[in-house]
View: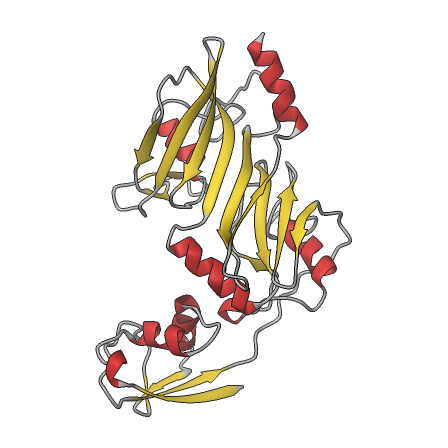
Length: 304
């Protein structure tokens, strides 16, 4: 366990305790700082404190005990991955349809994390006090396309910060029901559905969510091929937002019709563009993934 003793400098006076810890301790996020507070691992002038919002005064002494990252009981599995790019800091994965990102009840194996544990070996980030592959963001099981994975804490902190600042470029292609003739933006907060807890919904007290959509092609008089650019990244955001304007994604039996006209194995949604500032070089990098074959086949069919 590492023990750090920090003194509040004049520039940090008036700062929140959790923000101060995240600023002064490399590779520490505000979420991890709050976890340390909750665990009683932070002393404020030698007195335990658990409120991250505590405002600091000049010359206050903050003592932080940082335990070794906890291991998680997830089995490494030799699962083939389509790696678009890899260096010492990050991997860009092109996830296939049907692959779950992280183990959960009912999906304890065969996930992207199981595959990453095998591929990365000891190169795992320990963000938030847990040893795990550096999953910065997720896409749904039946959504295809690009994900960035971090190999170390420094890269993870950099990418997490960019996500929180909404500076990462994420563009998705999808087919929706109905004719969409004009580009637009859905700016509606998303939260957990009040009754169906596995679903998300538009909620007045939810987290702000913004999706910009661009019409690429009207397919006959029943469907539209559109591109969605995420400004925020809430769970099921595109699916919820498009359904909220009466254009649910084709194949989405959760937010659209329970009986779908095509065997799409879930929503027709592809994460085709991913861009961000590289955590080491400081340069903007952007990656692209072509539409999967099932998507192309469906477009051809709907164009007839």
